[in-house]
Image 1 (tube, one colour):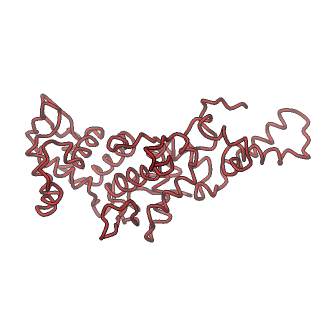
Image 2 (cartoon, rainbow, N blue to C red; image 1 turned 45 degrees about the vertical axis):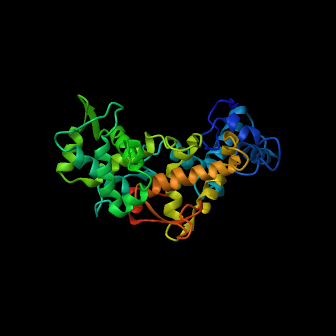
Image 3 (cartoon, one colour; image 1 turned 90 degrees about the vertical axis):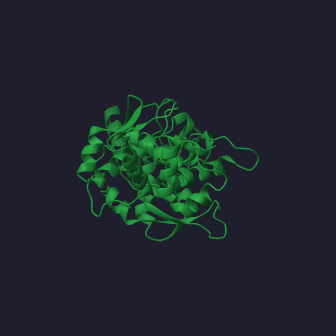
Length: 339
């Protein structure tokens, strides 16, 4: 069957064929790896010396071979098969035979996103909080929440040049408010932020795990990871969140550098660099992808949701490179089966 240029690439990258493996068939170097070029090379070798009595027989032979290929472990995918990677990318919450996300676990989750949500929920309370003209939380609300979250010393250090004047200037709270809205936990009613009926029910039952599960799903699936920052949107970074969690569960018991996980991501999805524009003269497409991946996936997602801990150079807290390892919560939040 001919693959259209706008069809999803059969390698499982999530990109269109014309943006992915269509360019690999031209050279031996590009056809190495799990892309279509390598698949076709292998298929040609497999067919050498074979004879078939009919087209149906040939198609059945090829179909069996492709099925075996789809379920075979691929080194570039860190041991996942093409079929597993396809499910990870396109059906992360609808593949129970591969992965499940418990909504109840013990002990109760501890994560920055849940800490901030609890501050948000406590501040909204039973009476709600009036939204500003721009649809944000009031300034004083944000300042009080920031003092509670960072501590007085941390607050003064973070806002040494001036206190936050609006919700987006306390960006962590801003993100949680947006995600809580996407999760159906917080909504607006008659100009006020209020807790939804479902949220009040969960809070009354002290079901912190269920609240966390709702925030996790909304953050991974609905919230745009490219919302903040100067970098362009690179959808595969967010779409492959489950692949990153798989990597963290597999390799995260020991401290690893963020570069290690960047390398794993680029090994799995090398063609993503063709989708990215360079930024100035210092940021090549590869550097842009690496920076976006570490910021959006490892820091803003995995660390913010309490799945990893990150350590930076104490001398240079703003260095691009850091090291990280998984936290116990990761083992509770996502359960892989047969991977």
